Amino acid sequence: MDKIIILDYGSQYTQLIARRIRELQVYCEIWPYHLKGYDLKSSDIKGIILSGSPYSVTDINAPTLELSVLSFGRPILGICYGLQVLVKTLGGKVVQSQTREYGKAVLSIIDKNGIFEGLGSETVCWMSHGDSVKEIPADFRCIGRTETCDHAAIVNQEGKIWGIQFHPEVSHTPLGKDILGNFVLTICGCAQEWTAESIVKQQIQWVRNTVKKENVVCALSGGVDSVTAAVLTYRAIGDQLRCIFVNNGLLRKEEPEHVVRNMEQLLGKGRVISVDAKDLFLRELQGVVDPEQKRKIIGRLFIEVFEEEAKKLGDVTCLLQGTTYPDVIESTSVCGPSVRIKSHHNVGGLPEHMNLRVIEPLRFLFKDEVRKLAIELGIPDDVVWRQPFPGPGLAVRIIGEVTESRLEILRDMDFIIYQELRNTPIFKKIWQSFGVLVPVRSVGIMGDERTYKYVGVLRAVMSEDGMTADWAKISYETLDMIARRVVNEVTGIGRMVFDITSKPPATIEWE
Ligand code: XMP
Image (cartoon, rainbow, N blue to C red; front, side, top):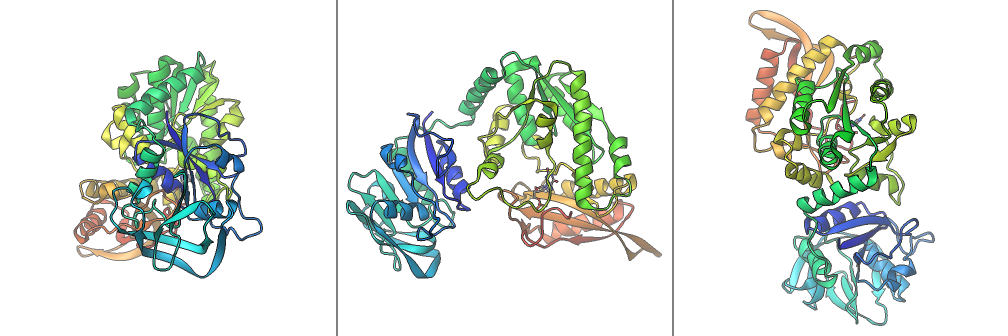
């Protein structure tokens, strides 16, 4: 399949470039700029994009351009730092500007061919740079400028190496996708083969080739990633797959029954082993108030329970995981893994512990692509659009100690929030919406009685990837309905508050 390689120089927008290209139905991968462990040999590679960077090319330790990229002979597009590193490597001059240019600018297009094909003579673009190109290399010409940037776009005489100072991948450059489309489709000549149907076919074949006759176990959480990975793998290897679902007692209302029923419909009976470990988890969490300690206990218990069940299956050698591309990029990022604010619990510890070979059929997919695949595989809508849910579950949504009675209160509150939001126009735009139980008592009045009950919190955020988030602008009517219903229907909650903090500075979860 035709593909584009994006060389990552550490920009926060690198993933966004990849997403835009995938939206054009062209496959692309993000590789580190230094190419260590990667090889530019495949004839499938039709073009290369150089990303932006937090560095300045004038820094002593600035990331450089590998000469093999230039000698590879395929079209290249440098974006921001990518442009500057091209200019510097090819003999032009980049200087530090007095002021950083940040924000919208009007791009005057000098040559309407190539990457600017089909655009007018002016278009809005989005700039974010400190350095500027002062002199372009000998065989290049300028094809676009802005009021403050003389060399906002350049191309070499052969029409193979392109550079732009602005960011076409961000939505503030309204015609950015057309510019990327011109590069990827026309200049590189990529075929638009990256569709849900082709991904399913390709990944089924990949699973068959990778697994062969071995047996696979899947740690099923019920989220869209693990369900999609399981259904895809089942299509590939049938009964060689078994799924283990651990009910840790920290799930939402009716969730365990739902997950098992859904999976039985998708894989048939007998493929999912459901383990009821509620009592064990609650017992071990007794008296624990520290969030990190909660996470550690839940992570350890999950591994213990899973391992014990997997052993009963006998000859299992592979572990299926629903790892997606953002996790892969995170672990190979040229800037190093981002700082962990919370120790996230997932099934990360399992493979080493149990000596299992990991199978990750979704490792090159973004969340929206996983969802398209899930739809293609016939996975029901409520799983496809299920919001991310943390591994430690409701334990990190109860401040302080987790008890059965608090869990019950939280589940009822959370269910009302879901019921009231799911039919609102904003619901599909919300990244996560849920209740948090703050076991602080507050005084209220119901009828003639004084009440003294816990505080419930509504948390709802919009986000692209969970790294940053803004609180969701839910209508007053919906907020009103949620507050009324929770306080009236949930014994234990006397007051409802709405969390209006973004991330940063707050995190999405309360613990
Ligand atoms: P925060 O609270 O760090 O959450 O802003 C970002 C995203 O991560 C999820 N989250 C977790 N997921 N184990 C998980 O598997 C965890 O311990 C955990 N803590 C937070 C959170 O729900 C949000 O989507």
